[in-house]
Image (tube, rainbow, N blue to C red):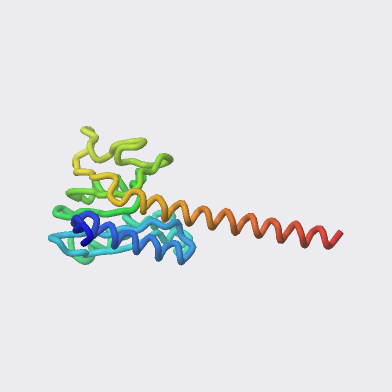
Length: 171
């Protein structure tokens, strides 16, 4: 008999499904869900390429959707689940929307703003603090990212090889 999943793992699985959908669309595979009172009120994944929008990060879009669904800009009582540690922009929105908690999977060594490079969640200079739970399903979240970038590199390598072969035939 398998072990019971915690609520955090259960909700992270929804975020992982969103991340996989992003990968299928050619987007960096990051997914997010917002949970309020035990209910998923919003879900989203990265859409920067598709929408030509630098702010179209998974958790940013999910928080906007949650605000619309709940008909309020304050997301008090809400937890944001995201597969990769939020960047400064998204962590800033978490402060400004007054979330209670953020749960993330894999850390982001190049841009993480909830403990890796910065910690916006507990900055005494800001007007709101929130709880952060890192590392939920971290290995699976990181593997989704690794698979995506591995496939992208292989596709670029194949494209380069095809170009070089075509260029060689033209000589």
